[in-house]
Image (cartoon, rainbow, N blue to C red):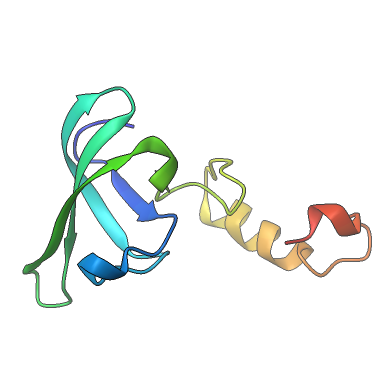
Length: 93
């Protein structure tokens, strides 16, 4: 992940008022695994500015298991297969 990448929070941070799934942007990279991430409100104001480790966030373009999607079609395909009987139960989440 790099500066200005959009990211998704992987866990709740109640002290900052953030929940898993909130969207943010990397505004500073301290080392390869440590980032300052800004989360904004619907009105474009900073809601929280927190330092997070790589395990706390995932790329906005990554699927639930962390694989990157290349297009909207791939996202739709992945979502439609979640309940499909040909996908083994252990792969459905």
